[in-house]
Image 1 (tube, rainbow, N blue to C red):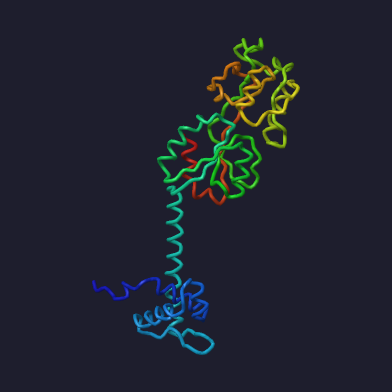
Image 2 (cartoon, helix red, strand yellow):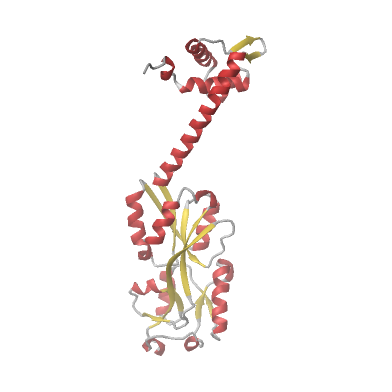
Length: 297
């Protein structure tokens, strides 16, 4: 098979030609291509020599396509569009395979909860940047584009974001002072703790979860005196150990050994946290692999 000399034609020459044809002006085309005018003019003359046709009529006001130039433009436009499409698809593939990932992990769960997933992700992506915050703050960072995806605790207000509930959840358990008589019981009902102060968060910190638990508390007839919950877990546990009140934690926190604090199951089965993956809708096609991995980790 005879190979045409045009098979070695640099496709960049065709790109330059198309931009000049759209602008009908070498100066404006050069600005779009981030190059100076003389080399762009040389590239156009080189293309004309390779094709053996005159592409433009040059005049004082700029350039006009010749009939041959119009035919060449009609031929190359689909080729350039296909190139753009191919580059976009390859870019998505590269991103999907994971050059980097900015992932938020909620501090609502004890962090060993995420260790298996983090290990698998570290082997999959070149750069894994993990940030750890409460679930509402992770949602704010997603909306600002500071992270790509987040594993959060549900329920949570996530308007405008894609939410994939995962098959992972934890019951809430009671963390109470070891000196309280209730700590001797194997499990507790909320009613059994009704006379004890409860460390709890203000509704504005997480309205969806606050309303979710309030409904469960109401059905259980549980209406304790509430004390504002410290933001840091260590401070909260220190105050529980001191006997200031009780709080509710995801079950994974029972692995924490804190002198003066005991963890006991709570019999209200509906009182639980579910883990979910939250992604901006425009990121979802890129991170289908992450969804699958999060579901199976």
